[in-house]
Length: 122
Image 1 (tube, rainbow, N blue to C red):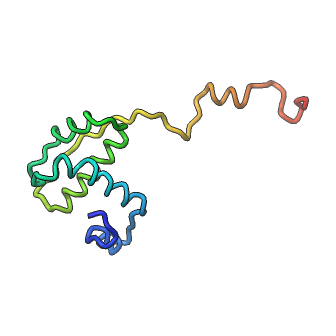
Image 2: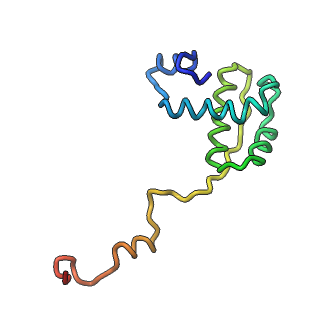
């Protein structure tokens, strides 16, 4: 499914959307390394959210990675045209946002000084 000439990606392009090559590669890796080995012998309608979540909890992965694997599976299920795609509860992300500085970090970088910067000694 996540190959350059796949119908799924051709449909995305026809709708004016694209998927970055690294995203395609990531979805493919999730299929090959996690989903197919564990669930590949089941038909899509036999895959239950609780079984997928239990399997992902057993894996040594970040919650962000687990969520991406769930998203990959949802794409596969949608492509498989099953009557209803089960709802998967996303995992809580553990990491703190990397683009925000805490109050302590801001104070360390920009200590409060009553003098305006143009009056401070060099």
